[in-house]
Image (cartoon, rainbow, N blue to C red; front, side, top):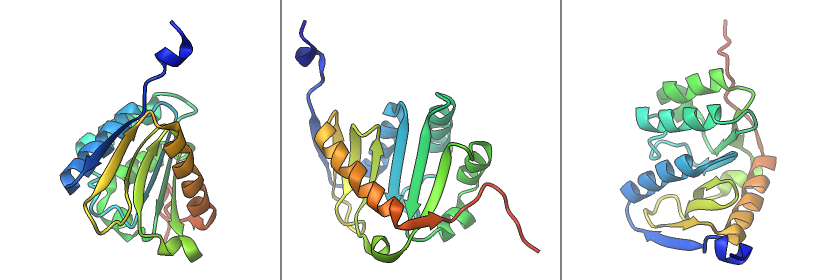
Length: 167
């Protein structure tokens, strides 16, 4: 058997509802082996703090010492105020989980996406629209989204810390 025959072919599925997008998020978290990169306006529609999603993220983070979770958002208010499970994961895995807030040009981005291992992704070209594309085993698309996320990440600042401080 040649290596070419063993490599899975890229697969693309069109999604038309927000529910399908949420289901795709869970699938991608389950597929991730080393790295998850998530970009969204504020995560309020992503249902990132459900027990199921938290369980999947926890399993991913404990799955390997080198596993990393990068989250970039335009606004951190929803995460700070309504995502206690996500914040608990951040406390437990602060060495492998990072939450940044976009600045400058990145703060005007209108798409949202989740990228697993530069190989599998789900992307909505316009965050306000439910339409999305889910891709599996697509190195070319994964590389493009990785570069896009890197640009966003470079134009963002750490915004949510593992500890709470105040007066």
